[in-house]
Image (cartoon, rainbow over the protein chains, first blue to last red):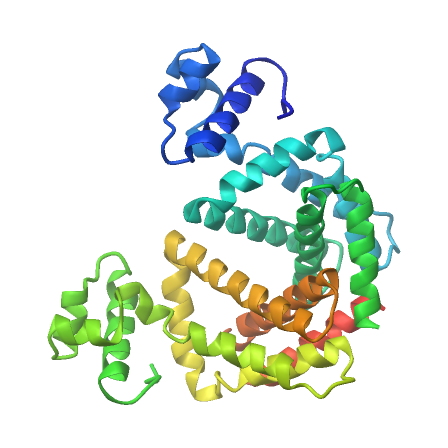
Length: 187
Length: 187
């Protein structure tokens, strides 16, 4: 499983993912993770508020990347073009060397109902942030809400393809194909 | 608040909604609801598995309505046309005399993080059921997943408009406007 970040944070993540995958999320304690990473529990809490946050650590930066895409798309860019820029920014977070780690994370989440609900809330929060940014670009509320949902839908579906066994395409390419499919379906 | 169903079930729902709205979801017990409806707790449990299910009671029938729309749309109907039929079927569940009750329900859910997560899971379950039905109509998986998400997005956004203060339009009309907006955004 690829290490997501260097140093102690990355080691804690690696150990936590391994333990969650082996024993299930519920059966693993912060003490187990700290022991496996050869640090104190106190050190764990310097990096993460609780064990769930190991899995949702990058959420804030992903949200910022999405929103920056909307904010920085050149003025005059058509609506789905703005969505495309936001998706490209988000894809930067998931280079192919994170594919295995992302797949492992998804398996952990799929095995736990509470984590699934947390993941859905994450996607909804992303959509709401995108909708706000789209309104600030001048889109009416209805347009902004629908566009933001479409962006998150393309992200979610492409992400599922990206982490499926044997997939070779990059997340960016899968998102572009998804957006093209959505466009074709709507016309 | 409009009664959703006649008889004991409807009375239990009315009482539960009133109590949830007044005291918050967490502070209300099944005993409180049963007492308010002048039945025993045992009677409550004949209708609902727990107090949360009072709020999510119609989920199954809503899912069936959505899916039936996809199944029964005439062959040759274009993709967004199929979505339109499914949305029309779903709208039958929400005539305007359910608007006040639906708004009250939403306020209860918005006030409770766990209920919000449950509501998101409900929408995701609806989308998954729609995607399965769309695949059975012959759509490729990518198309089916994106179309299903688009349908649920239009439903969710239109539903939010439908229960907003002062709104006069029907859910069906709002959904049709949402779908037209989505189509315009994609072209």
